Amino acid sequence: MSKAQALIALVATAVMVDGERRVIAAGQPLPALDAVDTDALLAAKAARIDDGAAATEAAAEGAAPAAKPAAKKAPAKT
Image: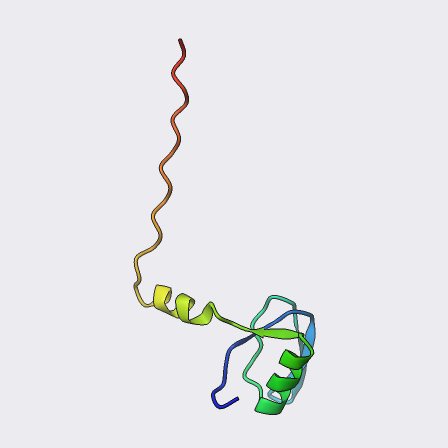
């Protein structure tokens, strides 16, 4: 893996952050890890690459929000 990729935990995962043990819940982003740890988590299917990271960043930088669907009108009474 040549470039650090954002990972999402698929199971509760214990990691060391600033010398402190932390448990990251499933569905939460993992902190930056070295390549060996990243590869091990991906191989064990304990984490996945966050494909939505780029979309989230684009939205945060001012991309237009999705339009709300039009409200459905009630059928006319006869």
